[in-house]
Amino acid sequence: MYLISSVGNLLITSLVCLASTLHTPMYFFLCNLSVQDMLYITSILPKLMAITVTDDTSISFTGCIMQMFMFVFCLDAEFFLLTAMAYDRYVAICKPLHYSAIMNNRVCLLLNVLCWIAGGLNGLMHSLMVSKLSFCKLQDINHIFCELKTMLAISCSDTSKIITIILIEGLFIGVIPFFLIMTSYIFIISAILKIRTSAGRLKIFSSCSSHLVIVILLYGTSLGFYMKTDSENSQEQDKLFSLLYIAVVPMLNPLVYSLRNKEVVNAMKTLFKITKLTVRSQYYNK
Ligand SMILES: *[C@@H]1O[C@H](CO)[C@@H](O)[C@H](O)[C@H]1NC(C)=O
Image (cartoon, rainbow, N blue to C red; front, side):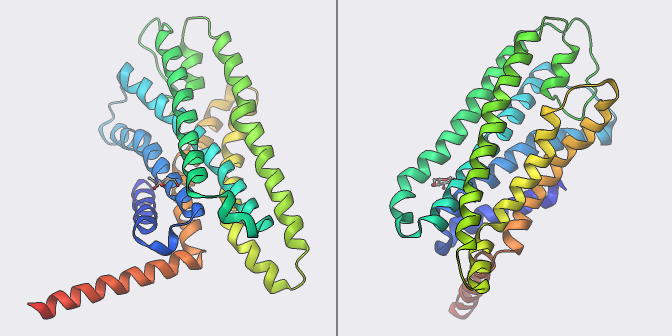
């Protein structure tokens, strides 16, 4: 999974950088999402593989805090990026004539940078707070990585404040973006329904279907996990669920976007043709 995700996301990133037909806001967002996916899995999966191979399950405190930082940073950035992408699709479909004016390069860059900064600040806040907690003795973390809630559970300091912060934050990181995405899609769907021909409908819908699939995947797996109340035997479920959004979703993102998308496939074909041509011309020059 790590290999497929890395290769897939690297492919998307290089494709968007190389193919000028993909230099549009939607693909810039996608490219940022891919970079963030790569960071995300790289901070968790190699360590998990090392643990599996060597049977040495220890992790340093610094390593643990860093993993937690990356986890919060990337997950938050992903939610914000998906929200920005939904807004981008809304403008493209419902206000097509104003699209290039509204989604200009500056706005696109600003939205992307904001997503990264907001995620980064939140990650920093959580890792600082957890690094101040005391962990009385050598502790077992019953999870596949240093996950925030699990870390709080094994601390012997008072964590009620942090837990309240997480709940309130859930509103701003999970619930509000989710409603913004839903609102965008309500407008998009009503715009699609107004189109008379079914071919026209399909064409418009296909430009946002990949995004919709990823939103459903990510929200389905991660929100359920963070919003539900804790019970004793839910830890095993938690681990399984988190594996879904740590390993499966980052792997599916590039697949969903590249295989189902004509623009990406065409860009890939064009690029391969160009490389073939240059290889050939080099050959003749020799
Ligand atoms: C992220 O988005 C910005 C703004 O549109 C774009 O310029 C940049 O190339 C993207 N970065 C990556 C790494 O994809």
